[in-house]
Every structure is written in C-alpha cells, then in structure tokens.
Length: 640
Image (cartoon, rainbow, N blue to C red; front, side, top):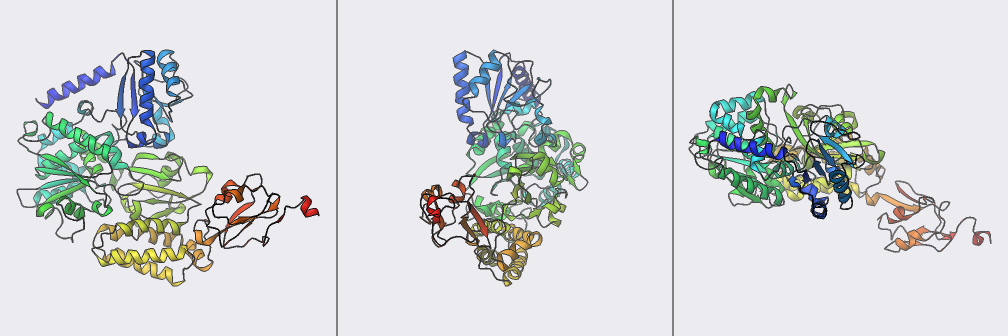
C-alpha cells in the first residue's frame, strides 16, 4: 500500500472519531498518571457508564505534562471543546459523568481548562493557564492528544510525512536540512546533529548502525520516558530518517528495563510500522531497508554514556571506551555508528515534516528549537514542560512552575541531573541555553531541573548527588573511581561537623583533577555540583567548617532539638512519641531532651502542638534548659 493510501485511511478514521456522536473520554495513562491512581479512575468511569447505560469511547493517552494535577480525565462532547478535569478521584467520577454527560452541567468548579475551539463559561482555556502559556509544544504536541498505541492517529496528524519528504530529498539533502535547522543533540553535549550525521555518512563501510539512547538515568528526570509513552512514533520516524540519511540498515533503541510501559508501546509501534511498510525491506517502495531492535538496559547510569552503551549492546559490561576513535568511525562492533537521544530523533522527524526554516525560527540565534525539561523539587507546579531555548530561568521557575512551595525563598536549581550545576537566585535572569549554562558552570544535560528552597543545605544536597554518581562510577579509570570517592568522603566529613579549613582547597583540587582526567562524561561532569556550590554558596561550606553550623538546619550531626521551658506545658505528647526515650518529664512538668540519646529524628518538633511551639531546632547554638524536668511555670507544684 502506498503512503497516500495509508494516510487517507488514517485521516478518514481520525475524522470519524472527531465526528462520532458519542462522547469521548480521555485518560492520562502514562506512568505518572497510573502512579497517581488513573487505573482506579478508569474502573470508576467504566462502572458509571455501565450504570447509566451511556455509550462512549475511552482512549488512553500519554502525559500532557501537568504532573502536579494528576490524575487527569478529559471529556469531549460533540460540538463542545474538550474539558480537562484534574486531581480526579473515584468519588468525583460519578459527579462528572452524571452532571456533564446526563445533565449537561460541565462542572466548572472541577474543571482545570478547555482544549480546542469554542469556550465554556466559567472554564479557562487550558493553554492560557500559566504553566502552559509560555510553552511551545513541538516534541510534546501529540502527548495527551492521541492514542500512542494507534499508528493511524499519529499518521492523521502529519506523522511519517517527514519520512516521505526524506525519500524525496535524498540522504545528502536530508542532512543539509538538519544542519540548516540548527538542531543540537538533546542528550546533553549539544553537538550539532547534522554534522554528526554527516561524519557517520562519510565514514567508509557498507555496514552502519544507529542507536536511540533512551537510558534516562538522572534522578527526577522523565522527559524521554514520557515521550516514548505518549508518542513513540515520533521517535521512530526520526530514527528511520536518520538511518536513511546516514546509510544504516539496522538500529537499536537502548531503553532501561525500568520503563516497562515505554518498552511495551515501542514494541506495539514497531509492529505497526512493519504492518504498514514503514519498517523492514523496501520501506514505502524506496529500496531502503531498515529495522529496529529494542535492547533493555539493566539500569546502570554509566550506560547513558554512548561508548558504555555500545559495550552493553554487544553483551559486555557497560564501561566507557577511550575516544578517539569516535563512534562515527568505529562504534558498534567496530562499525560506523550514530547515537542520538530520544528527543533528538523526535526533533529530526518534525524538522522534515515542517521544514528547517520553520524550526530555526524558534529559540535564539545560537540555540534553535525547544527543549523539554522535567521540573521537580520544591516547586508549586511539577511536571514535564517544553520551552524555547533561551527562555529566562526565572520564567520557568516562577511563571511556569508557579514559584516555590509554601511561600519559601528560592535557593538554587540544579540543571542537567546529578552531573549538573546548581544555579543561585543571582542567575535567575540568565537564558536557558547550552552556552549560558556552561558559562555558569552547569550543563543542559538531558533536561532535568531540580528546584531547591531556603531549607535545602547545599553541602548535603551535593553529598546526596555525589553519593549517586560515585556509586554509579564503573571504576575503569582512577580519576573517577578514586577521585569521586575522596570528594564524597570530604563532603561527608563536612556535613558531620568534622570538616577542616583545608577541605575546601582539597575539594577544589579534586574537582579539577576528576573533571580533566576522567575517561568519560560521567566522571568529567561529576564535580559540577560541587564546583558550582563552592562558587555560589561558599559561605555554607564555611559555616559547616568554621562554625560547626548548618544554616539550613539539615545536617543531623550539626543540629539539636531543645524544649523551651517557658513554652512547655507538660502535655507529654512529645514524650510518648519519642521512639528512643530521649525525653523525660511528667504531666505538667517541663520536659527535657537528653542530647546523648536523641537521634535527631524531629518527631518531637512535628507533634508539639502549634499553640505551644515549645520544641525548637537549632544549629551552632545552645538553648538554656533545665538539667532535669521541673514543674511547669504557674502550676501548683511550682507555687508550692
């Protein structure tokens, strides 16, 4: 079947779905939605439709990005815009079904926003909401909109037209189109994609490979997973285009096994491509042969590095190789190989679909297009976002993310995952692009953003992430294996109140050594969090070392809990809840915490009634308290 016929059929099916007189119900059933309880929502929807004998179509869609508002349930009634309901529970479902589908009351009090043409009184447009208003959805355009398990819905929305155009242009012009678009690799390094493809195409050899790096290992990152779950065909189309341009006949998707839904939907999509002549031999009658295999990774962070990833595909232990030679010359099994990440392949497809001129009009002069980020941490609106490159960091944190939780002050954002840098409030107006982040001491990485507030200790924050990178080091090279361990030991000493003035100098020396001498990107970027916090938050290190004080009241060894005698009413709540018996006292007696027994768990502070607020948490200071319990001031015992 020709692509014209495939597309015609897909468009007809899509139009029929839009014109169906039955209401459509769309559920966000990506991993984030399911974790928030979307499965129980689906059961409740089916139960209510059966109870009321309502005929409706139910579609599972991917993540639209509003993770803070999950679970999401959308309803489309014929002739009406789509209504998105957020934070839905099984108890709310019967109200929505009965009130809107039977009584035509859209329940504005429960609705988050509308999508599509037309308006409904009392409900704002979803894409006018602060979190979505500044976004430019190119990569995520289909996520939450189409059924990711139905290829025809992707094709009906311009899917695979980029591949058709690629066959019309020929390999050389495809590469020129990618170069003209200015696409940089979205895996972190930001190397020009078209140039990378050109290197591989020009490498001698009849057998070449391409690889999709879907080994997303950064804590708190879920950009690649969400895209694969919500729109797998966009990534696969980009891979076929890239393979055609390079001259590869076989490709691999290296995806961590912890992403079962992404792998399931990729397998469904690959089978659908083969059924429609979009994968395999003689794709769309072009005489081009190409197939894709999924390789499940075991979760090693180092396998996100391209040479370690290739070792893993070959069945070896995932450890980096020295470069040169680069993969474009000698990669998988010694053959020329091109590796791009999930987002880069999806960008390649949309560039061919809509043109390089259109794509390069987005972003700034040196950074074209958009970038997806997972926005997590101490932020009001967590989720998956897509913004033009060059957008100010402040706009992401305060306009899109809604600012810091509980009215706290912003302290820093870590960009680029555990190997990224921590950027302070003084850099909030910096543009988010490759060069600006690098100048500030951070990296773009694959797109993780972890926001911290005033209650975060930057020394302990670094210790946590360095614990991760040190444990994930493959151990092949001494600078990373030994250097990261020594850095971690110093940070642990500092957070335990055992730091010395020489530690800061040693940390800086170790960071530079590990950064310049490590074999792969994991070791080379591991010092970034330490270097940036030493650069922007040195006073916190100095407080830990010179004053034996944690300004954020986080480091356990440097904090103490006291009960203020003038506030304590002897209610015995903290005494009863102390698991280690560190609190002594009786009814109407001022309680006392035994500092030697106290494990610093903080339960006493949590349970102390707010009207008393007798328990305090301090660092670097001592509160004058009785040596043993005494009667509460004003009690009969005290008066006697």
